[in-house]
Image (cartoon, rainbow, N blue to C red; front, side):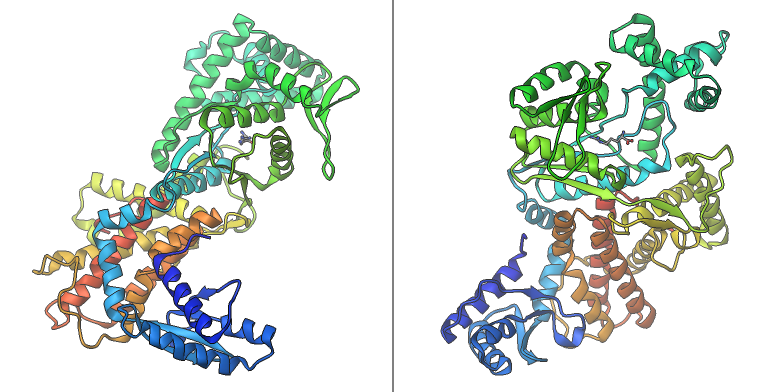
Length: 576
Ligand code: ARG
């Protein structure tokens, strides 16, 4: 667990104070209390020690407090300490410190360079998105794409050297099926060049329908795949074209989603690397022959197939080749896979095999196994068929965003192009935020009313709050709002609540990285927006005697929202 500067300081003080009292604690836990009245940080260390030494926790806590007070007295961080509850010691931060932290956020280069120290010198590889060729970009790959990109952004900002790799599903028996379908029903008049991704999907679906009636089709498909594996020129030509059509579609989607993946070594990239791989694993003695197939056995899992009895390699084989390739060529400290929870067993087998082969990065493998995306009410109605295409979802989001724009006052002053631009940002932002704001490990519900709710926990709510902040900064005559020269004597409850949230930004970014969960940041941003809106609803800003300080709070909120949305890959909106 990486700690922020202040937590390290608190720990040191507590350790010193305990030392004076003749105690030593293995672990000093420091947390934010749930309620503001209990201060900004709290430790239960006295409770634990009192238990092991069979003394009174309250007494120990108050001795600890007294020792701490001697230490923190001359410091510019702590306002006061207090003993509370059964033996907690609570810390209250000074206004000056909170303001200093907020200033750091506003001076973006300072903030960025502090963050970048966290992961300096380390390298990670993240495997995400990985849609399958010849199928339109489905909703199934949306979570991987969004969450994966956000994790990438977060690690990058923390100074890690990051490689994003799109492990495209561009190889496998399904290509045999597709080739058969193209040759049989693609229509001789139709030139391969004019195929769209939808045509390909239709052909693939047709194959499965026809194969139910006619078994020979499956056999034919197998033969075509085997031709493809053996570099048959005709098979190869069709395959290449299909890949090209698909990539075209994926590029369009990525641009829309604000996603950019460093490399795309799809499964086909590893086809010529599997022979060597199998030899190396064989040499290590991990392969067992089973009815003509080569398999790897595990203690607590079913076996994985490395080579089928017909000689074909598998998804597992190619993933093992991928692990080795990345290990040898990129030497990562950490390898992250953002892939659905339905592949839990697969990755357990991959990781276990890699460990036995000595291909595990220092900080290990992580499978961020995201849950399913479900629709409120059970089913998503599509215009074209039963599979849910991302483009259908985006179309619906755009329709709803247009409706929001229609009733917004500000949009009346916009040109049509500006309006469409805003509609697009709202629609995509809403879809992405819904994906990112929920714990990756859980199944999530897609509920249009929530996803697009301007006053609720949604992407558009953050965009709206951001635009609201900018409009305040636009109205004032005071332009320098990044720092505070005269600290106000008294600040009101809403101002206090807001500034006591803003300084937590840095630790939230670190926590998001450690938990592989962009939701930590998403939730935090919602909290900041809520506190800002409470403050904004209650207090006037312009032309008040508190204007300077209040503008400073607005400015810091802008900085946090802008930076946070950037990490999540959600676009800001200036006017809304
Ligand atoms: N293309 C695969 C699928 O859609 C996901 C690939 C994930 N990454 C990997 N290295 N296996 O199921």
